[in-house]
Image (tube, rainbow, N blue to C red; front, top):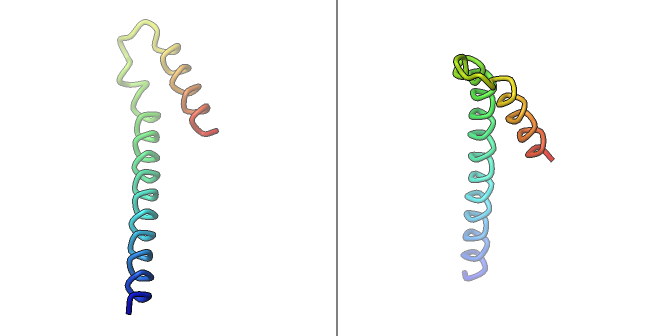
Length: 65
């Protein structure tokens, strides 16, 4: 009986952990894609627009590794 409880508890924690990882990964992907798509338009009046976009791309590149 205790063995079954331990197995079921560990399975629940495994599924919760995997769900957390996938939830964060999917949310981060959506946010990054939306930011890449909308940032140039949002920075329309900024004088250093290209520099900001270059820095953002560099940090996204570094975060991938």
